Length: 240
Image (cartoon, rainbow, N blue to C red):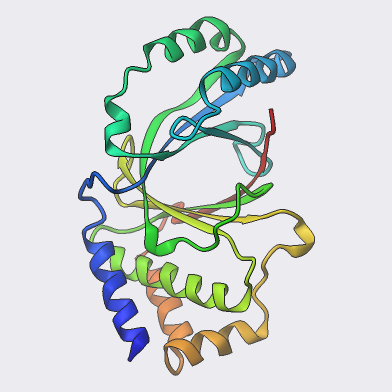
């Protein structure tokens, strides 16, 4: 019965996820690639800018470098722990500094995207982890509940199995396809990266019901878009 109440609360939360809330937490993301032969200059310029503008709570930016996939070598910048009011702040000095001192060494890969932090998908309080497995999920219109259910339940199972588990879930609010979510699973060493073994399905079904892992997985896969429905890449934190 307890799990039913948890799931109902989760589904209600998921159904209203697109509604902006002054108490909600947001993240802005940016993606850049260093120009040919300018990796060192780019990283030094980003490090200086980060220390000047992004070292205090509310303005912290994390930088990760993509290790796998078509965007290998791209730097992703995450402006974390934002509130709705954060987007009313005047950041003209910061933007001007970037344009003058960092942009000459960089190529923009993706413009700003704003994300809602889905609190129901959060696992773990530590962070930021050294590595991220980033899974971008594109789903068919009207099928978000199947996606959310699978993400929510796998998270509950993972947290039960691993006390050191770390995960964050976000949905787009502006800057991209609204039928899209991203899941970040964090770890500090590849040796300790979470892998599903034969007991995963047993734990999942024990928590949510007979054959529920197979049912939820099938519904999840049917909800994905036929092309690029789920893309996973690995990223490494860049410390400045």
